[in-house]
Image 1: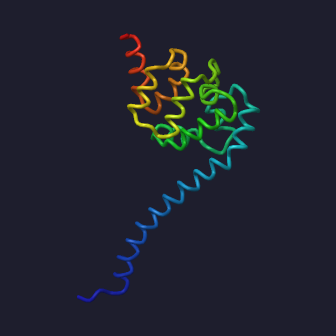
Image 2 (image 1 turned 60 degrees about the horizontal axis):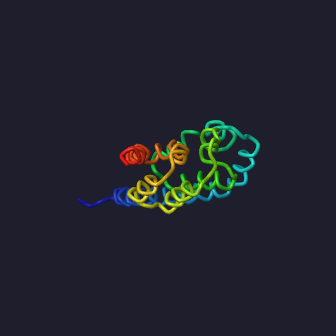
Length: 164
């Protein structure tokens, strides 16, 4: 049986569509990161204008949906977490304040070390080790973010402190 040109076209188009979906995914990821970088001035302005607002309110004011941000955090996409950390740092506020509207603690050396580890995609073990040396206040201030990222870290750090 001789293949018709339409059959060959269908086979070729299937392989092209797979390749193009991979390219589309990469382009989307790159454009999302670029958009996040371009959005920083707008985020800073929104944060400054809406002191005390939580993530839901921040999303309402920005172009990113709550679902998008929470999905990206819960999927452990570190660039998005790093973006949120940078937003908090550049706005001179804590992550708690940025995400939850509760600014009970300022950055201290312990928090900065953990944030550095998160930004550099450090291993789970390194982050747990760093958390073990944190003060209870620093653990509390990072608890919400870390619960989203690594569910067991605050529990491990807390239980190790009580064991001493």
